[in-house]
Image (cartoon, rainbow, N blue to C red; front, side, top):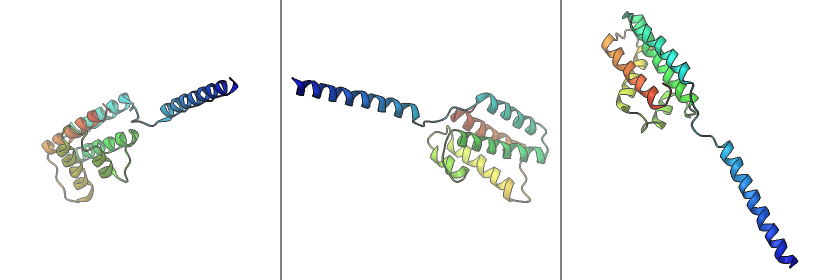
Length: 141
């Protein structure tokens, strides 16, 4: 009788320990982080205000800031990568229009690295539309 009672207590202890272990793992598991949507919406409105000026400096700044905002959202979401391109690749299947996001990011790179780049207002508008959709895709706005 003592052996049966000992085995029951042993299995009960294993079940309790297993249940506690499951709860601890579930509570500490890192999933996608929630983003501060109000923050991202506020920043997005600031970017759109810059684009409305339609001068080269404001257009360039709007595209660069939109790119930075998306990168911040990716980092805040916990997407790992050494640079934005790496982080964007990790979410390749998440984008509603991956080509548009990459085109917008490449425009930002041209603005940053080419000294004589001229960006038309319509190009900037398309880039911002792509960045905005990407921010929606990751749950930032």
